[in-house]
Length: 247
Image (cartoon, rainbow, N blue to C red; front, side, top):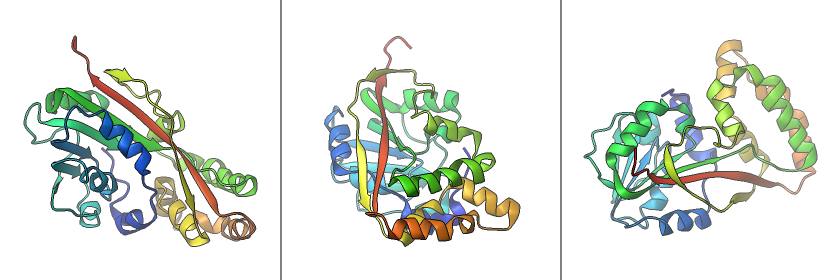
């Protein structure tokens, strides 16, 4: 798994969007029990913290110590440094396993084998994520310019799985048909710029060019945002499955 976010762990914790209560309630309603849950590649722990309100015990893993240091804490959350493809959990331990905005970084073959090892036979596996944000026509055009023209070659190849709404990831599970969800915010300019600054392609651009690509759109973006309604919408990505009995 690639680690693109350790250096910006603090910014990641502040600026990254979360998941609305509606989708959390929906996911939890599908779990067979609420004893043990696992949030893999937890990042800033935002999903683990929400699951901790429902499950007796939540485990959360990541390969970044900096991310875990900035993660949200709770008495019933246990954080650990370990890769998602090979964990130290016991066989058939979890009622629910979730991965939020991270599965595209994994080695799918070894990861899915690990899910089959540690998920209970009647447990659920949840893949969450969010696509490219939508705002207003003028700002969307500027963000699209940043996303495609300025940063196009700086995105990791794995980003395409998000652009394809996680529909093309290997998913060897008995899939549950799910509802569609969105997340809505009202952001000031600093929040919008801060979020764009957490994009992995922005970090790659900075490293290669010793310059901030956001400077290329900063003035234009600030003007468009000042004239807008400040509303932001994230289309949410969701796939849920159970273990295939024949696999």
